[in-house]
Image (cartoon, rainbow, N blue to C red; front, side, top):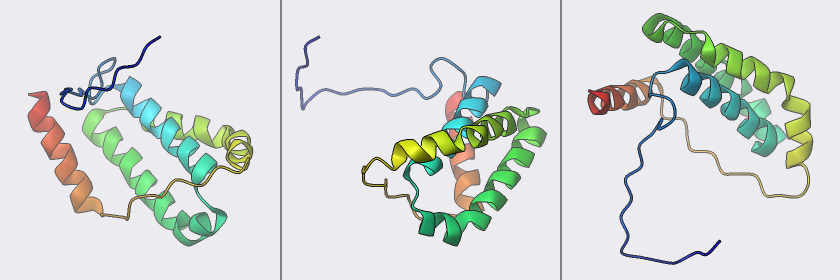
Length: 122
């Protein structure tokens, strides 16, 4: 394999290229990877401080996806991630620096992002 640096290159990134934006496939993998990311990278202090808020947000999101997209795929992905929690927690403990997480932006910001993606999907 070869790599070429091209600073003037432009790329169009289409989310969900293998699964559409609101597909069960995407919902499942986003949920799974969300839990994996937290297990591997979040510090224990972060989880203690924000754990209840993370659980509340994810519970609301799963309920929203059930109503809006008629799928439990986000729940299935998160449950699989929880089953893998210990393995991913150990993998993150090998000395890598944790990833800085974005600040909480709230429900309105999440709904605005969703509305924007709905416009793109049309």
